[in-house]
Amino acid sequence: MKRVLIITTGGTIAMGRDESGAVRVLDENVLVKQQSTLASIAHVDFFTFSNLPSVHLTLDHFIRLRQLILDKAKEYDGIVVTHGTDTLEETAYFLDLTLPLTQPVILTGAMRSSNEPGSDGFLNLLQSVQVAATPESENKGVLVVMNGEIHGARFVQKMHTSHVEAFESPQFGPYGWVERTGIRYLMGAVKRECIPVRTEALTCRIPMIKAGFDTDDSLVQHALERSVPGLVVEGMGMGHLPPAMMPGIVRALEEGVPVVITSRSPGGAVEPVYDFEGGGRELAERGAIFARGIPAHKARIKLMVALAADPRPKNLEELRELFSH
Image (cartoon, rainbow, N blue to C red; front, side):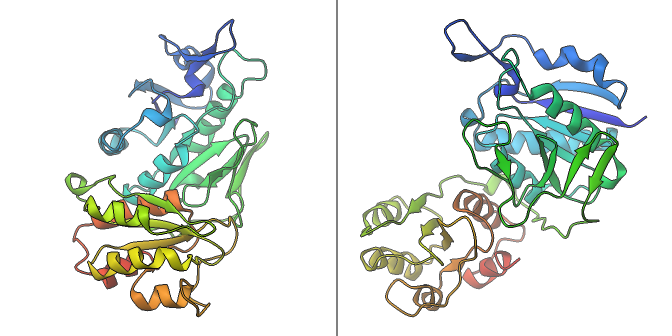
């Protein structure tokens, strides 16, 4: 029988709703009570890492969780991490970029707390253990299992604030499904990117700045005054910015601060096509980096990891190469 470790970090899956309707953190680990039910799928052990809402997790939690998974991986065939859904996709992508593992690592959570009618937490956990115990789940990077769907960490996003079918992979779709007869994948091994990282060099001091109608460069200038190591800018369309933002962007690039461009549009790619002030062609010519296929919050994770890569990128060109995959 396969051995699966379940690491609990908190989130709605470990919370309960009180008489006032408030959803709160519970003192006891309600998931451990399901161990006997999961025993028919795999030999399951639990490890309590934290009991926090996911918006309370910090970079230190990311680093310690990664190290815990590395330490435990040799003892288990697969690992499941239960997690709050608000930042689940960021944790999943960080782990996907930095874990050099072949065995399955699954993240899951819940949209309804443990004592709410129609709670989805236990089914998500059970299906995650099924996926983790399946040999076909190897060599696919970090996966997210929610609502019977198996998603890749790079592509998955929380698309709804409260529905149980909140998680989707825009443009790409799920890797597979959990069906009553077993796990069904649409693909074999997935080409993934794993960046050797110096964890002591990681920093979350990378702001995300959102462009909108007539946005100026004041936030960019403020960030540069704080000596940030990089910027992620969410542009419009293919990554375009208003002219009033450009002085700050130009200053950042001239000072050697990486500027990663994403789009607020959930579909399509950022590309250096349009040739006008603030357009993609000018941004590319000035040295901006285009993050293809990932939204701003994941571009921030990737820039954070890329700046701490081992060996460290020597210049913007080497950094741009990391973003070309």
